[in-house]
Length: 289
Image 1: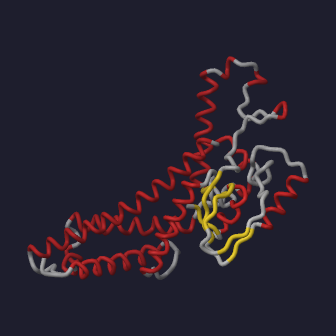
Image 2: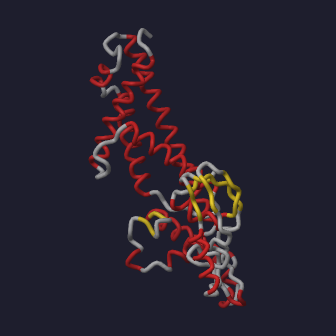
Image 3: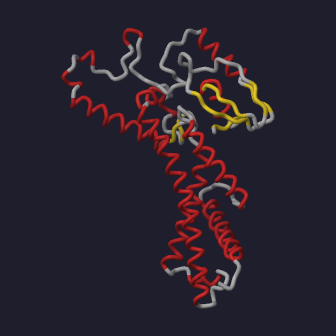
């Protein structure tokens, strides 16, 4: 090729910028979408993916971030389809060397390869992120359905439920548990006495519902100048003083609140129990490693 690779990469970047700006202006997101915004969102997506893989509990669903990322993915797919189908002749002419016959074709193929690689990278992170969340929901389905049932009915149609589950996730969780309950009933529960058929029985002071392990050890790094969990510890003490018994509910189950006071400085990396740093991770003050 007669042209430098940096010229082609710069051209791809300019086209991605214009495509993303167009998509965001039609999805009522940010009116402008600079390369810095795209890079920042990719970092945030990667951090959310890493945190979701490391945390034993579901983290708040990043609704706005996922909307922006999926908008860019759709714009990228549209551009790739235009290039691959030959409908983007005008776009091919804008590729450096596009008017140069064979060289232009080679450059167009390279642009297409770069766009497809970037798309595949983003799709991999998004799919892995969602699969991690689905794995947690299916493992503790009864527990999370219990949390959903505690939210007032008028709030259950909101875009996200208490910030932790998206509407699609709530629908999936309900359908999954309904199918599982029906399967259990047909397979063996129907042969049990009526009083022994519940999957969420708490009789005898022992709950059948297993929630995430709040005592699980995690590795965290402090992102701010200083972070402390004094407020989380106070909240945990109040919950224990009220004698809340339970199933590990993040809203106040026994042992769910922070129990050890911690203080971290920027850049410090600690190994701690999840219950003591959950609030900091959810607020963005700490990141999981």
